[in-house]
Image (cartoon, rainbow, N blue to C red; front, side, top):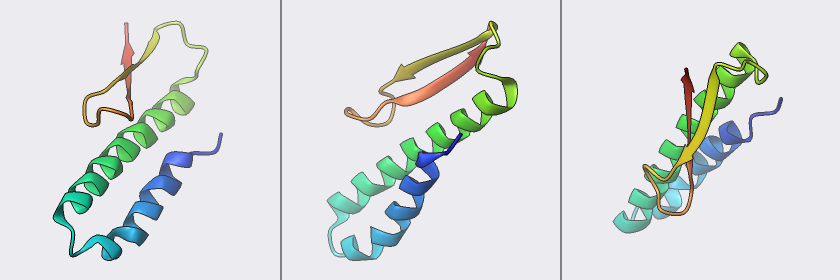
Length: 76
């Protein structure tokens, strides 16, 4: 499975210097990086444990950003 969230993290790091004079956009970029990082970790957990594991519960929450959900992975 390809992890697109890693790409999002890399893109955010690349464009960060373009927003160095705009603290509001830089803060927004940091939040997007945080969502991408959490989701990347969730994808790795799902891949390691197995998506078909019935004890694995996956949900989406808007913890860090109002428009981009963060994946929450738990075992029941």
